[in-house]
Length: 258
DNA sequence: GTCCAGGGAGCAG
DNA sequence: CTGCTCCATGGA
Image (cartoon, rainbow, N blue to C red; front, top):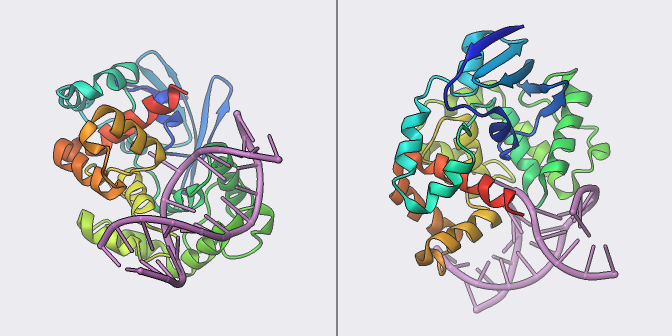
């Protein structure tokens, strides 16, 4: 077991904030699957213990290379964010495997997190031999997965993507990559924004779901008569490069209230 | 039983 | 372009 010292990092808030679905409690820590990797992590105070990946991977995955105190400072300039940021300080936006992230949020539409986790576990067990399957390989034998109407989106998207596709997205701007992602069946503005934020490093992305509609309307009265895309645009104007973090803190904070 | 969930596609206006 | 309906399923 290796370890790394962290600052302003909270493993549980990070994992439980609905951005990643392929992890499970194991002992006193968690086992996480990301792409071809399966690894164990456990946090004790500021120290993160890990096994199964190397240090550069871990730093990249949890964004430990970022000065998170600066993110906090920036977010706290907005009084509406203070409570959420204080309560869940250390919530990092993960850098996930893009294909895995795409599958997760294709499963997410009109669903709930426990169910999405089950869907993703099925992909791992049935196609991945313990890790996440490769892009373009989730094509058949999906009846047992109980995906409902999302099954056709999974299959059709897998017919259209491979590893090169996701690599090409990495070179694109936010609007370019979003437009390209939305050409995939089952990927609309919300799912695209989640993929862009959680796997493609676009921290200006601001995914708006039911929870975000509600929390934004509570905190910012000017959002009360806005549509979801208008709320996203409002937040991106207001928070700029910190919009993604604002979104994730607010989302987790709001959900933990219920 | 009923309501809701990290929405998107298809269609009418 | 916006607004409405339907979608299949399980968790609460």
